[in-house]
Image 1 (cartoon, rainbow, N blue to C red):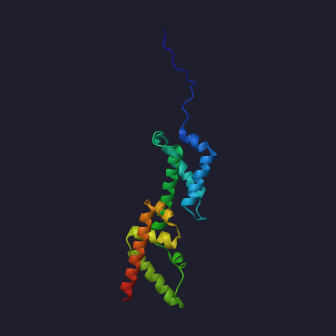
Image 2: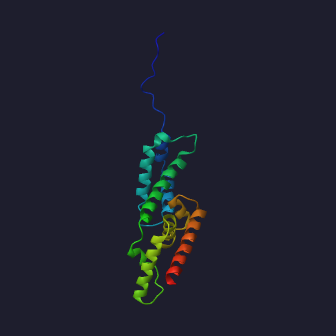
Image 3: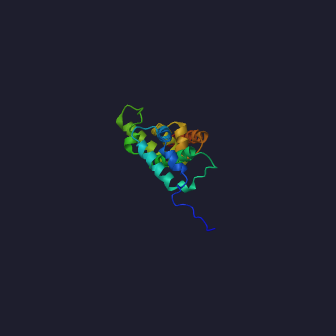
Length: 178
């Protein structure tokens, strides 16, 4: 009896990543996650999700159904792209325009300018992790879960870094004043 070859019309197995991305509910979840991580209206949340989807599709061969659900795997890409965007935005020291949003406690403009200059100097003197945490919390007005997501740590560590950064800022200001 001759060997029978498998017919060429057999459809390949369904790719779980493509199948999940075709589900509108998954797309809505990814967009909601992007909006919750980056809670600023000027951010292109749809573009962020699109970047995450492109990465996920490029790495779809790495998806392991035994390790977890495809939706959880996709949300990891959204979180990573959001973290990278926050890191890019917070990597550079804040500009004068962003520091001008801080309330001036002194009535004369010269005193407020001196205060902003001192703040810039002291922020630049902080270690990178503490500076980034303080800027995200007090200049960008992010909450602790968003800070933790941005820097890839736990919420408790984010709180600790903000606290340590503020204590170090206070010590630098006290030292300069005396």
